[in-house]
Image (cartoon, helix red, strand yellow):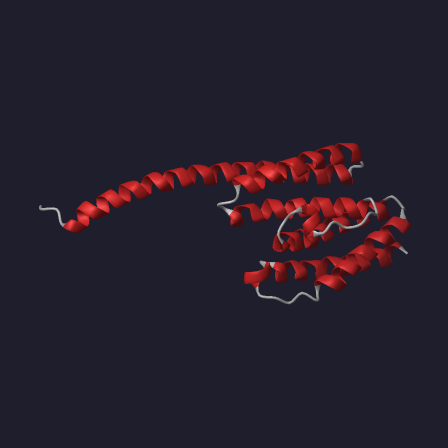
Length: 193
C-alpha cells in the first residue's frame, strides 16, 4: 500500500512526540516519587508531634523546609501533582504552630500557593482534634479546651470561604469534614465534663 502525505508527516511527528513524552514521563515519575517521600516525611513529623517526640518532629520539619525548595523545583511542570505534598506541608506546619501555641504561618511564610494552604489548614483541624482527644484521655482539660477553641476558630473563619472548586480545589468537602469533626469534638468535650 502506498504511503500518503499524512503517514509520512504524522509518522515523523509521532516519533518526535513520543521522545518528548518519554522525557516528560520520566520527569513526572521523578516528581511522583519525590512527592511520595515528602508526604511520608510529613506524616512522620505529625506522628512525632502526637507521641510527644517534639525534637524529632522539629528536626524533620527543618528537613521538609529544605525539601520544599526541591519539590517546587522538580514540580514546576507538574503543579497539580505537587498540590498534595504542599497541602501536607501546610498541615504539619500549621498543626505544629497550634501545638506550640505559636502564631500560625501564612501561605507567604510557608512559600506555598493559597489552595494547598487552605486544604492543609482544614486537614490540620483533624490533627488538632486528635490532640484534643489525647488531652482528654490524659485529663488535661485545659489543653483540650484550647484545642477545641482552635477547631472552633478554624471553623468560624473557613466557613466564610465560598468559592468555586476551580479556585480552591476540594475546599467544600473539607469544610464539611471540619463541621463533622467539630460536632464530634463538642460531644467529646461535653462527655468529659
